[in-house]
Image (cartoon, rainbow, N blue to C red; front, side, top):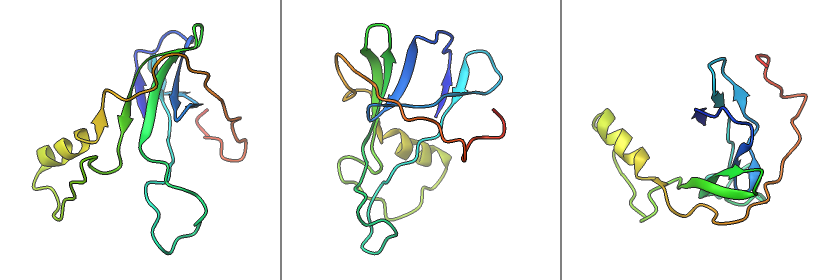
Length: 128
């Protein structure tokens, strides 16, 4: 995820109610974060006890008021069940397939208490 225009530290970005650790890119007000999740569970997999974590609900939270001021929902596949059997013909079709998975509605309304996970020192980025 890439955020641009975040110049005030009173806002936090959450996914599924957990604050994302934002890392500065060097440009003013620009941050990046990685989101790792389980999209589907095949019959034979490494971690069969971990459930599917989709769709992902992203929120921008005003931490002073504990309120979500906006967000979106990301579906792993087309939410209507549309399954494409062929690869996209060109970049425009690929982009339209990606955009069809994001919805501006459905984020968390009202009061939000984001939880935070402490950063791991083992998997820390060398650029920070």
